[in-house]
Amino acid sequence: MEKGFPISPDRAIFLADAHLNQDDIHSRNFLALVDRAAAEKVPLFLLGDVFDLWFGNPGLTFAFQKPIVEHLRQLRGEGLRIYYVEGNRDFYLRREHEGTTFDVVSAGDMQTAVGEKRLYLSHGDTVNRADFAYRFWKGISKSRLANEAVAHLPPSIVLPMAGRIERNLKRSNRRHRGAFPERECREYAMRLFGKGVDFVILGHFHQERLNRFSREEATKVLAVLPSWKDQWRYFYLTAGGGYGFRAFKPGEPLLPPPSP
Image 1 (tube, rainbow, N blue to C red):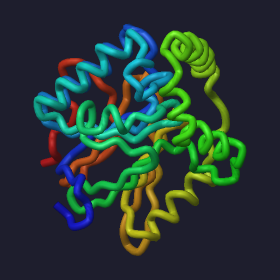
Image 2: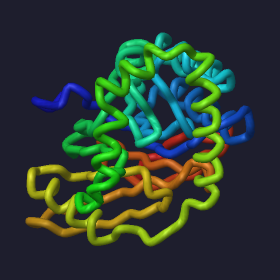
Image 3: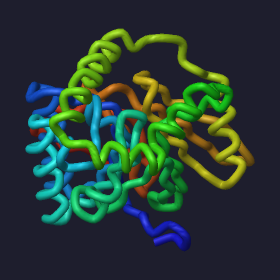
Image 4: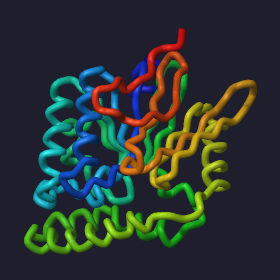
């Protein structure tokens, strides 16, 4: 394990933005991938927004979410290493889910290493530092005051309200398109590359991107994870230097065979 990186697997897979909202093929394939990760002993990093809307308070969990969370919790208890970086639709997960559903829950970013490569993981919703309105809203909605306010309201009030929010967000998912912030992502990655990071992995934008940069005789990588529902794709990285995107196919290994 590299000094300063307590999370340091020899291989891992990464996915984001599953936006699960019902018991359907997307939810079932998500759980099938988690089952495969457990069987192959491949640590799993989730970079936010597994659900359209997720409150850490167990009293505010939607019915369809409960078996998914319990399945994750069971597999972690059986030895699967699983890590979570909160997305913009995740709220106050750490207290309930760190050490139970996940090994680590981060409300912001996460740093890890795979082999000799240093990784910086973020959901990506604050990459655009000029978006002051969103940054202000996130600061308010994820504050301790907001957390306490929600926690003290009865589920009979919060869940119907959350249900309306979830349905609106579900419709917004279908409309989720727009220009990819190429310059902002590049500048964000470059700042981190300058601090010794080798891979920057982001979610949030629902667009698969893999950009390589030459810096001081080394190759640095910016990977942007696609929406899970598009083609059930994820990113992998091994200590041997292999990396890339793959589509999940039930019954097939998560990682490609090592190069000869």
